[in-house]
Amino acid sequence: MGLLDGKRILLGLGGGISAYKGPELVRRLRDAGADVQVVVTAAATHFVSPLALEVVSGHPVYQDLWRADAGSRIVHTDLGKDVDLIVLAPATADLIGKIRHGLADDLLTTTIMACRTPVLVCPAMNTEMLGNPLVAANIDHLRTLPRYTFLEPGVGLLACGITGPGRQPDPPEIIQAAAAVLAPNDLVGVRALVSAGPTHEPLDPVRYLGNRSSGTMGFALARALAARGAEVTLVAGPVTLRTPVGIARRIDVETADEMLAALEGAFPSSDLLVMSAAVADYRPRERQDTKIKKRASESDLSLPLFRTPDILLSLSRRPDRARLLLLGFAAETNDVAGYARQKLVEKDLDWIFANDVSTAELGFGPGDNAGQLFARDGSVTTFDRAAKDALATALVAHLAPTLSAHRATLEASHP
Ligand code: C5P
Image (cartoon, rainbow, N blue to C red; front, side, top):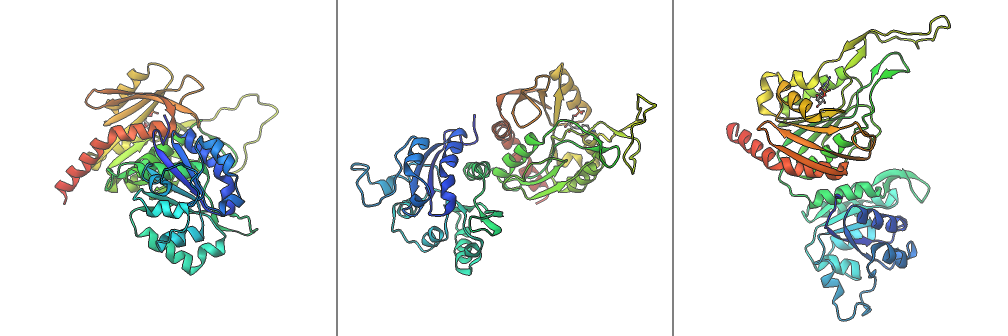
């Protein structure tokens, strides 16, 4: 199971230096489950070998509008119609300019003009070119057309030696953006609040109590909700993850107390809370201002610990709780179903997703996940082992009808 399972993508490469990343992008799109065909502009072939693209895509690579290298097939009218999405990476100033003005003088631009397939545009170019008012105006104009979705270029050291915006985003970001374009837009209007990652409870300036949560599952859920149109606020503990595509707001916190404060602030303007953070259950009673020194005379060190607030429990007891749907998580090492059901009731949740973290391969970290979703009405849905991104997509797809119905009910009661 991948983010782009069964999707057919046409990757168009413009003639920018980032075209050299094309074969890797093709491979990663295929790993995500997509079938990928490639069209290159003449300029792109200066930066990347069509043969390499042919080998990694498993399809002929088309480049010439005038050569009959596809037999009797009318390539430029067929290519775009036979796919679900066109991805332009890199989208150069020239390519964007031509599309904006309806010009079609090569196979790639002709293909785009000859179909209505959605286009994900990934501009990548020199910072000055990107900021040029003519290029910016072309981008702004295309943004107003629903067919074109833009993925912001990254900021970094560019081939020309300057550091600034213009870098082609890495494949995972392009894949996320592609999945978002292709996802149904059934969660528009749903305001989702998602917590993710661990909390760190400081002992002194250099040490903390924490846990092994990486935040991957929470970030994947935030991305999957945003992909279907939800307005997502992501409250993240200390993690090293980049903000997923489409997230409206990210609030970074460190401790359980800070996470509680951030979630309480956003709770009244949310319709859904996804509490996937692994909140530390205890914190040191005191935080030392200077580093705790080891003493030669003492082999043991005892630290008094205090319970942290149970964030989900306290939020579920608020008077405005009824406005929201609540999804909790239970990471257990034994009697997973028993503990999950107990927490569903104790914390007054609509659902709890339970996963077994007793094995090293599942649960924590960037790897796979699997588990069962227990609902308030007693139903249980099993989610088989999959990459977290794909599992999050499946989980959100399962919840989507209930989420949009909930939103409709809220709108009807407060039009
Ligand atoms: O730790 P526990 O198994 O009780 O976690 C179940 C749910 O409660 C999870 O969704 C977790 O995010 C939440 N929780 C919390 N505050 C805590 C501990 C857990 O919100 N202090």
